[in-house]
Image (cartoon, rainbow, N blue to C red):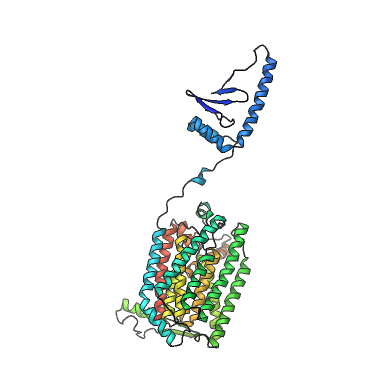
Length: 514
């Protein structure tokens, strides 16, 4: 049946025929034949022609009126016809707006994101629970020896749990606010096509770090009673990097393009300035005796690693007994070199987390694992308040994972990634040289992501210069995109990298405390 365009509320069914009536002209159309009860006599052709012209003019006016109520017209015709063919013909009419029905299709079912959240959260919570008696002993011992100026309360599990709940609640509220404002993340053009074609990623808000990072900082300040200047300084530099990332995020949202926001040179300069100001403050607090003296000697725990290898291969020594085959390496850097290295580590970790943040839940879960490992190193070394900050930030990262797991309801944006990386580097710097190498080991997955980008760019330039045609080592850099283009799902990518991240965190603790 062909498409019929008339005013709504004038449709009726007569027997098995669909009849549309124009009340103004009393004309009827049944199928393709016209039936007019008021036509003039056949002999008067001139008056008949005039009547037809008037009828056609009124019919066109009725059609124009029908367009103003498209939804009601469509519903009236659909109810009257009750035929799929009529609906299909009507949709094909070029005079009416096209409706993209794909916008209303439900997203495909995704499994695994919730399971991954539970595994990460409960595993880290169990690790914190195992630290509860040791955490209390370390905290009391550190305070008694004058290493911290504050008496901590609660346990590592409580630090983690309170931060988790606070972050999850605040992030959920902020996510709903950003959805109402329709502030969605612009998708990077150079990324995988599956991201650009995804209906969920293109309608996902960003800048989640504005919510959960301050939540973790506030929990840490609460449990340390704002009494440790080192923790206060770490919180300050974390919020400074948060501000840099937030300016970049909202600049992109305002422009509606991923390549907008802060220019790379401006962003990098701001990061270097914030990191330099932090290490200068740290040097002042240390030399003034306000905080414990920061060790500028970087220790490399190769002894434990080689003892472990010797135990596994030869069975000659007990693990951790320091057989003397390979001893720990100590590198005294002095004040200037150590603080310069610390500033570099802060900026490097910040950008490494930013590079890693390209798959739902990847950066938040890896940061949570690395923070718990670094917190154990701080607790073991007597810096209990820094351990409380690290574990609180781990809980905040896990809390954000509630809405950041695949499929993500919100992205952390540069506000989250830059501040989390800065917090990792600043915590290690405030602890001293004993945490520099463990930080590197605990964040090996972040290092691998950055190295993959460097190798990709370097190899492309070398081959283009030598052969005239650039070649790539990976399908796409960073590493997680290479795995995606190889057919891995996002949940599988995150789960695999979290497994390696957990192994790296345990190894980082081992090289720190043997």
